[in-house]
Picture 1 (cartoon, rainbow, N blue to C red):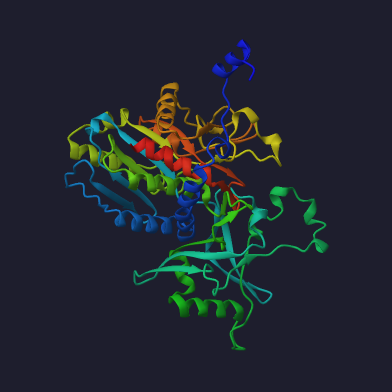
Picture 2 (picture 1 turned 90 degrees about the horizontal axis):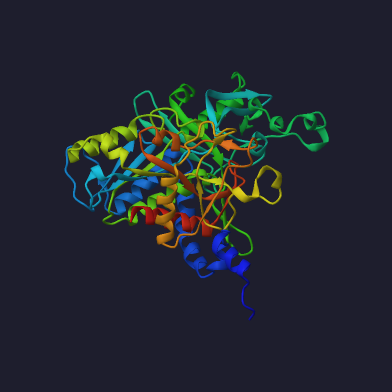
Length: 464
């Protein structure tokens, strides 16, 4: 074999390219595939943020976690959790180092783009009953037409009883859908910009077409739909004003590709990071630093409200931890390190123009470290410092985690936000880390199993 030239040796020493895991370490596929079986079950069980919290609590209780009590004292290795209004959650494993040496915070979100029912949703038109919807988060509206939808949510009745609704996930149950025009009649619609292929007020969901049998009744189709809901759940039309009901894709998580190397499912942004963070949290036994694993709501609409990260529920939790330990919260946060665990856009060869190839993430090259998000001139972003990047990269490389770096699209083309800016606002060093996703925010997103597994490995190393 010919000896490398001086230039070749220097090139090997000084340049860098992120390797494809399947080429560099093919034996890792078996572990990744096995790990992702649990992830698929989590996706199917958690189609909404409330359902994700319920599933997470089941997992935490099984692993020995107890509800957090601010009046208790805890020892290294103790495991607790706190549920915020049924829609967000924090889990903690107490570490060996005192709290004033900082926390290891990992924040993912469990809300996903969807169609929410309006407060007064049910109506009848031309002998068809419909639900009116208001879309939630950044969707491409045309993608939500003519796909099977399931109905999930809660209704709080007048007497205070909370009723949980789930229709469309079992194969024996009906599904629902938004209609669209046939191509034969769509000449005028075809002239619309793609973003208006289906307009917001056209995202009306078909829920019935048979009438209630009474000639004296107005809107008999609507009445039959209401009577069926009342029969199953004991609710009336007025109860919709006391409800949170989401219409989500009625599809199960599935393996994708001849090689089954990818997962296709609804809601992988950001439940892929929620599951990997949660399992890494559970697997942390006696970490050096106390962990704070956050599954947050409302990220897709700016982390708003008291279950989103742009509120003080995490701050108050950390204040409770600090008070227990007899230290000042500001000392805790100043020395803490946070991973804002969110997905990034994987390079799609079918649409190369919106990416800048040297600074984007790719399928099966590992978890993606995103130094900054935002839009245009990094507006609305947390921009991680060199010191923070160095710390996180060192943690991953010490444990053999495959990682890569990326931005969310080319400059002045892409842009988006995460929870990072809100955690950083608490004086915590923060950087985004997550899974590259194809078809992000669509009803059926794709993720590489190798990337999912390495994200879990990154979080596990972070908590070690």
